[in-house]
Image 1 (spheres, one colour):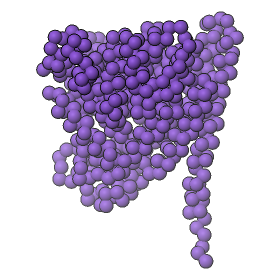
Image 2 (image 1 turned 90 degrees about the vertical axis):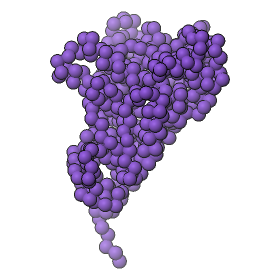
Image 3 (image 1 turned 135 degrees about the vertical axis):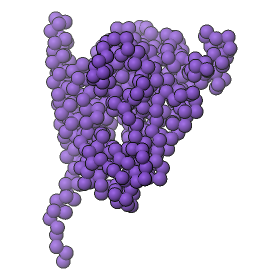
Image 4 (image 1 turned 30 degrees about the vertical axis):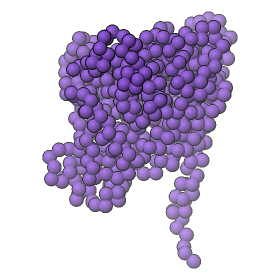
Length: 480
């Protein structure tokens, strides 16, 4: 009889029960936060004094912010991504944003001893055989992987080695399914929006992130597209080192720069007034570069980087921008790409009729009984798909009776469009952080016009402000 290894038995039992334990921890926290808001909602309805009512809500936001922060830090993994999505000034109460913004780039690191084992198993060679130097301390650690600076044998240029955290995929899938169940409940009770489709797209996209071979292909495809369609690419894209690549290990060129969240500190360190003209010009150039890159990727190519949160953006010398982490990319079907181009024009032109047509083309099904349906549909489009919020709107407030999401039930929302929605919201968060209020729809108008023109959807007469549309569009986009 083989003797029982008690330690191994305990580890196997712990592994089997870990998803159940994690699910229990999520639901206890989620129910606590949700019921807190429902209780305050009832209290607020009985409070006639507006100032006192606002104070009640503010206190609840603060309490919830601490609870959400604790849940995300304790559970980690997928919930760090949730924090990145909801921790935006336009999307969540100020108290939430203040607490969650610090979670963007603070996932716990895997110990170097474990990283070394993963690397050598994946690459089939020892670290000393492959690398001249390998920094044990990571440059950063995110929910799925962490990155180390290194130098290959016989090379003079530094590289970045991205290594996947072992065992994290199963736990992330457990987290997503719990969130899907919560989303189903929320859309049936409080938020008239197809949240379940959104979470299904999240499940698909995050599943892709565990395949670094796919990420390498995506990085190279976007790099080729941006460099081919511009005299100078609006953003830097790292070059993949193809001969050292597996599903769990990715090696790419090192790009020197500072995280965008540290931009203000860097400006002040150099003796530049953060509120002055020089700083303002630098911030405008940064946002201009990101906006052009995303406009071209989404509307011209349809294949785009779908995760522009602050941790994935570096600011390099001369206010140049580097875009990192291509784990989340999206390839929009042609119909959705052109439908979104049409919606961009509707928002830029402030045209409610065109917005309604675009909804139908995109497969966004809505139900409303409000008086000014067309106005509210345009307002909802601006709130969801533009970086500049409609007049009077400072953030999405799904529990507010005046919210467009409350007035208009979004019964069906294409899963593929969630990546566009999320990208626009992340760009909006960046613009708010940089202190610049602008409309990406207005900036993307010429790119949207070109996309529709080349598809035969627009004629010379349809395009505003140009007697020779093709040349005029290209000049406005590429400056040549």
